[in-house]
Length: 513
Image 1 (spheres, one colour):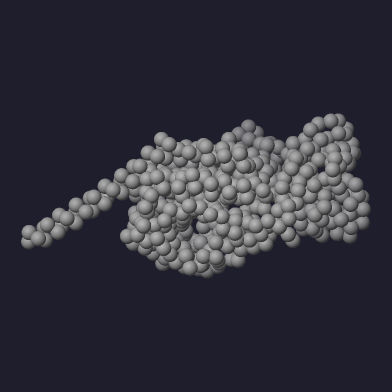
Image 2 (image 1 turned 180 degrees about the horizontal axis):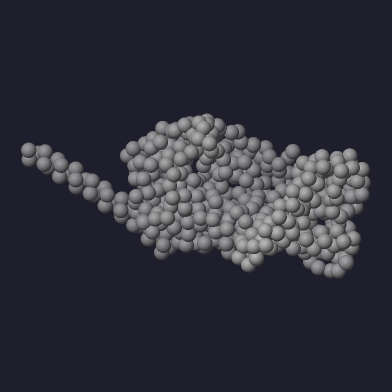
């Protein structure tokens, strides 16, 4: 009886000692994150010092090399893993001036991978893509674009976002502007359709007919915000003008005043360049061949500096690794972070990693991904894993209440089929979870826009996410149990059973079609 009591006592003491050790590590994580944060410094070096990270650009390569060096300065081994090749392109100066009927410097930029103007730029009249009865009428009109800049986007009826109208407009005005917007967008869609060309084919047809440039405007439904994507032209530049300046030039052309622009768009084709993922790791001490993964895509579009998509996810995971190396240098399992290339073109870097490291996938305990903006983590889904509630619940229980109190959970949830890099791992059966954040007007103000810059980062929220992710990674690493991979049958929007997401092949040679 005495021996039995002694064994129980030893067991209790052992459990208390283990729990105390856990709490000490967690306390150190929280203290380091709050009192010695490096987030602002890392963000400045990446967003301001390097800038946007378009796949295939020199800045993307510079960012990969910087990350390896930064991790090295923290004593964390890191490497750049090649996974493919991409069209190399370097953005230069864009300068756009209205020179007739009066003079004004316009707000705009060339789209990614846009061809350059001839040296010295081009000066040309701007014309609007007119209405056509059918594609034959479009073909008959095409010779008229020779030597012209052609506007191919709808002219927005208002430059005020919906929330501004809702706040100040009368009910009658609000209903009226909504109707005008719907009608304008519908009419423009018909206009484009009747050319017989899709969004890729229309710029090419105009270019081949002798247009000297394409003028677009992709308003993001926020003051001053435009989404900046890629050009489809092969020889002449494609530019995006702000809503305000696009509207000005459009109205001048529409009223017969024949506006003339002077356009200088400098860029450089740099051939075929290698593409990489940056991988850093803290080696496990007991189970080095099992892994806890942190995940954030490294690339961005280049209208801004990629601050919230996905600079914040990047600096968050880098800071998590820095803190873990300091307070938990000998994890039970290996902790890996993946900074993926070419997420924006279809999760290519992470898909390639999953394909290239197929033997690793069964050994990943869990993966935590952050991508959608600067806000505090607001939702976590079990992604279809039946027992995610149990193990995620254990891990999250150690996170301070002030961080978790507003998080909404969905268990077991449904697996995400795309949207960010965790989906690449989900398709391979890995328990991969998206740490989805509060909006902070992400979709209309910073997602893929010219306004996605350092000043939009909410550092207190990112710090909160660092603590959450660091504790999750620590607890997942320490857990004596292997996370269950039992999954539910996914359910569609109408409650019908659907299939688990299939693995997809990465595009290994991109941008050259």
